[in-house]
Every structure is written in C-alpha cells, then in structure tokens.
Image 1 (cartoon, rainbow, N blue to C red):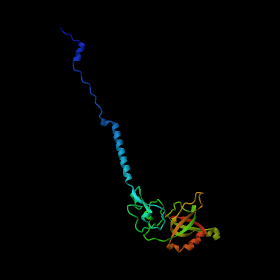
Image 2 (cartoon, one colour; image 1 turned 120 degrees about the horizontal axis):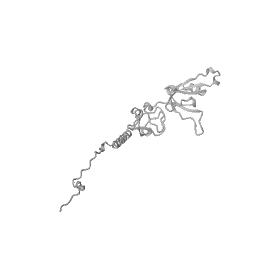
Image 3 (tube, rainbow, N blue to C red; image 1 turned 90 degrees about the horizontal axis):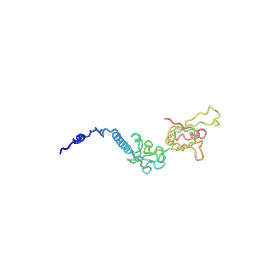
Image 4 (spheres, helix red, strand yellow; image 1 turned 90 degrees about the vertical axis):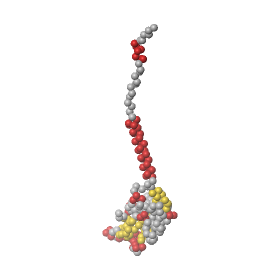
Length: 228
C-alpha cells in the first residue's frame, strides 16, 4: 500500500542546520580584569616600599639619663635605638650604635634623657674644666631658642639707681661665647614666672674676669643674645 507523505513534514527529514556561532570577547581584553591586575600590582609595589622603608632605620646611641656637660661618655650612659632618618647625612650627625662611644669621649654640652647623642656634643678626649655661673634673667630677655648647649653672650644693663644718670645705663658684655649648661623653662605648676635661671659654663681663660662680671651681674639686668 502506498504511503502518502505530508508535504509539511518533508522538511523535518532533512538534517537540522547548526546554530549560528557568536564571536565571544576574549577575557584578556576585559577592562575589569585589567583594572584588577593593576590594583594587585600597585598593592605589591606599596608593600615592597613599606618593607624597604622599615629596613632603612639605623641604630643610634640614646642617653639613658640626663648627662651633664664635661661628663665622660661610656656605654653605661647610653642605649641603642633604631631610628629612621630622612637622609643619610642626618644619620651621620649622630653617634651610631654599631660601635661603642669613642674611648675617653667627653660631653661638651649636656644631653637630656632620651636624646639622641649628636657627634657635635662630644668634646676633646681630655676633660675641660668650666666654672658654672648661675644667671637670673627676665623671661623676655632670653631668646626662645636658648637651651642646653647653646652658645650665648651675656650682657648687663646697670640699674638707673646705681648709676644716677640715665646716659650711664650702657649695656656691658660680661661673658662672650659661653655655653649654656642648663636652661630649665620658667614657671611651675602654680603659674609662670617672670624670671628664668640659666647656668652658663665659663672656661679657665674667662674665669679671670669673674670678679668684675659678678659685680656687674649683681647690679644690673641680664640679657642673653645668640649669634647664628
């Protein structure tokens, strides 16, 4: 018996056409992937810089306690501390803890507790004797930059009652280029003070002028000046 074929089903017997393929964009060209890789690289670079900066710290000597001028400096007076400096020349200004303090080194100025010991604070290996002279100075007659280790000139202006003549109140230089041994800040817990005590170290060569200088200091107002 003959079988009739429905013309509507004739096309189904043929092989189906393959689906059309679409061109997919390569993942390597995805901008999100590029941004992610850039962030990872930047994080790695910043981490390397931080670790590198931490390794740039150097060991220096720091005073364990207050050290007076003229004191021999030994390893018992200092402790090592790691410090990071902005430049190598800054680090070279201080004593490196890679080596002990120079044998027989003497401090030419006082060094406070916790202060990094500067090379300029070391005098000659032989101790130089100084005479400490206390000065009572009005707070407005001391430059704000004056501190322990500063080099100052000491001037005295006679009181008008002592001279009797206003024109005789000419300031007199009593000490030239003396080092400040101690310069505590004026005032206390009760309030500020109008005067400030400053102690200067007078060398042997200047000590011969002490009698005249002390007489002048007792009868006048003291002013400190600094030359830079």
